[in-house]
Amino acid sequence: MTNLATQYGAADPLFELHPAPSLLHGRDGEIVHANAALQQLLRSNGADVEGARLADFFPEVSTQLAEAVTPLCLKRVAVRRPDGSNLIARLQVVPNARCGLTLLCVEDLSEYEQELSAANKEFESLTSAAGHDLRGPLRILKGFAEALDDECGAALNDEGKSFLREIVKAADRMEGLIDGLLAFSRATRVEMSSEKLDLSTLAELVTYELRHGKTAREVECVVDADINGWGDVRLITSALRILLGNAWKYTSRTEFGAIRFHTEVRDGRTWYCVSDNGAGFDMSHASRLFQPFIRLHRQDEFPGHGIGLATVQRIVKRHGGEIEAESAVNQGTTIRFWLPPRPQDR
Image (cartoon, rainbow, N blue to C red; front, side):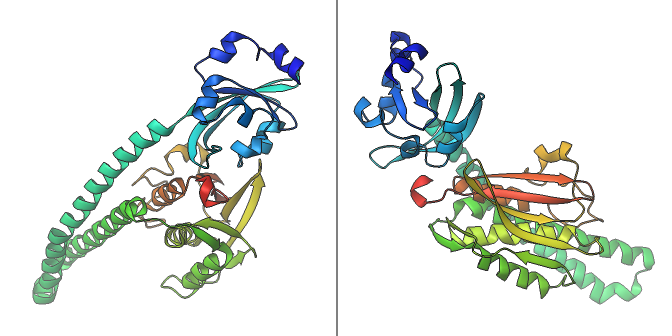
């Protein structure tokens, strides 16, 4: 292995002194060499790293790294240091089939994550304050509109009554937007704990709520058994309530609606999936899906506020995971997300 590492360039002073934290590993997952920058990033020495396994430092993606045959980039990967601390990094993977080794460059995203966190907290404080400040005037507006209807409704002509209904409807919609804005803010402000979760049971509870709620109807809901994970029970329940609620809503115009909560394993990661056979959407708009207040369907088709999926994304990212969507118009949608398997991997 040492000869192979030399062929790849590990013995080259440029590799050893290069400022980018880098290592070489074999297809068996053994780390052959780590340069000084990587040793400093991991707070370790060469003896701690060389000869160790990828799984010791990259538990979530070690199999994917070892089996890579083409260059790839992995974003926001949890890296575990020998002292037990963690960092979030971007990984650049460059396999070399000729010598059987792979070059792995590790970019520390800690400073970026801190800046992003500070910006998010500032935004969250603003949205929370704005949401609470808007509630008072809105309640007054809606209260006077309802009083006008009670006291003077009989004196209004049909056009006047229509205007009044539109005022109340707009006030209700604004109230929903404010509620969504506050929920969006709480998703990242609330203190978070981590525990092992029975996601199957949580999903069953949410589907029970949907079956007995205001929009109750016949929908085939399948929740696969024994789906578990780690996370904050309140936040993950909120995320499931939004995802399953969306699936319920977007199957409302499907003759035989079907919803399923299940898992997929890809590249060594377990993805939690909510699938439906509803309206779907054009994947060319997928980049807008998780943006706040952006909706891909008309209000008269499927009412909503455009804040739910943005909130779910916040929850998933706060846990250290990722979320994505797959859909086709009139063919249904699958929203999938993954969470780190253990609290220390966050």
